[in-house]
Length: 386
Image (tube, rainbow, N blue to C red; front, side, top):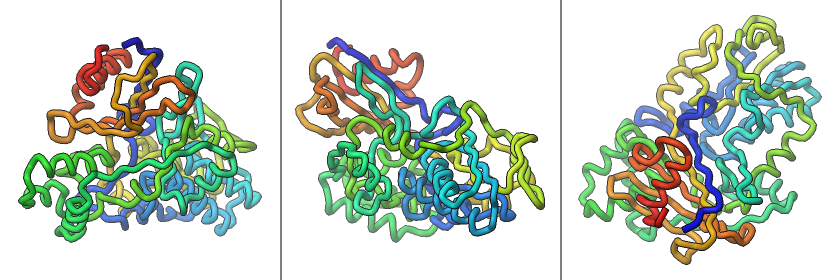
């Protein structure tokens, strides 16, 4: 079938992200998120979705943590603050700092703002390559802004189709031994393998994109997905542009070093400020040399947290070649190969399919050029004539 346009993501290989979102490993707890966000020497604070104990992996969690970090800087009397990263946490921090009357500069490594929220024009319409949902909608500060901006959204349902088995899974995970992995719990479960595999692929693997041997049984299944989700038709970019309006943002400026001194902070050896708020994803944090090193609790937290690998593909075609439903899943032959698909044709009338893929599929499909990847997905996942 003729393809009009397509796009694929490479979040796991992106040096400024190294993954899709943060997760808790088998030796970690939500307390590690809190520890990572604890101020350092009253001069530095790490903020983002990874530091939110109840809204990790979500844009409004990142935004809220940026605001919290800005309030910390104001409370400590800092008058010149640098924000590292212009994603949702960085923009939230910079906005709040400005409201406090604090001189603020945002340093962004990329040539754009938005972090893991970024759009691409495909055949005349902008689609998100990163975050696309407003989750926990009723209690989501960004959802209120989306309403103010009149962004069109549609509800999405992520149920597994097996609510009783899903409830049992959640209960078994929640009551597992403290350092048990998800794989440990599944190994002792008598549920028929095929039925269990599909449930796990749907409810855990798709939402995490990490090895079940690594993922915490108690804490890897964090709240968020399925709690009043709304899909933004089009793109987050209007939200991002609105949040960035009037801010002092310098693009193409990676931060390599941060030196914490008794009376100030020096960034990249030359830029001086009172304090710094670091909002880069934890996957990219090791690329910044912080002197003196982060305290032991922060370093320990970073060993217990990780980044999930989930990638997105957007396909625009001349005709629909997929099921006549707004949302569907496709399971691959290998355990952990799972994909979710949303029909986004209503965006502008052009047949459009948006997919999220994870697991072993990424090892075999996500190589070569973007055209190669698209062709493989069409052939081996969607079983369409590429």
